[in-house]
Image 1 (cartoon, rainbow, N blue to C red):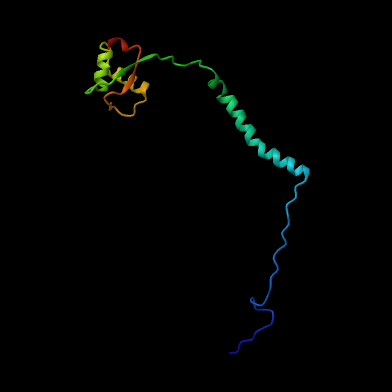
Image 2: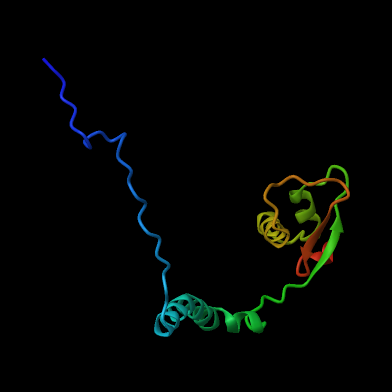
Amino acid sequence: MTTIDILGASPRGRVIAAAPVTRLRLTVRGRRVLAFLASVPVVVALGIGIVSGGGALASNEGASGVTFTHVTVQPGDTLWSIARAVAPDVDPRDAVDAIVRLNALDSGSLDAGQSIAIPAEYSAGR
């Protein structure tokens, strides 16, 4: 079997010219359309923000108006013991729940010297 080499068929010998680079040219109308399309999401986001939440941020209507006092945690204090001390006539579970919610506590552990807020409705006892 013999090998036949045809001139010009070898990819090594061929020079391929690069495609000419053309610059994208926008007309005035194209620029306007592009600016419009870029501004639509911004306008929509602002509109949604104004309609849904703008009024709520500007007013205090519906605010709970919770008043509270502060208690400094002593060594050995627990949420349960503080709740029983500040609200002896109330179910301690309700007082503990109110204290946890007011202070945004994620666990029941307290540190000595820590200052916690007590709702004013319960603060008369301590």
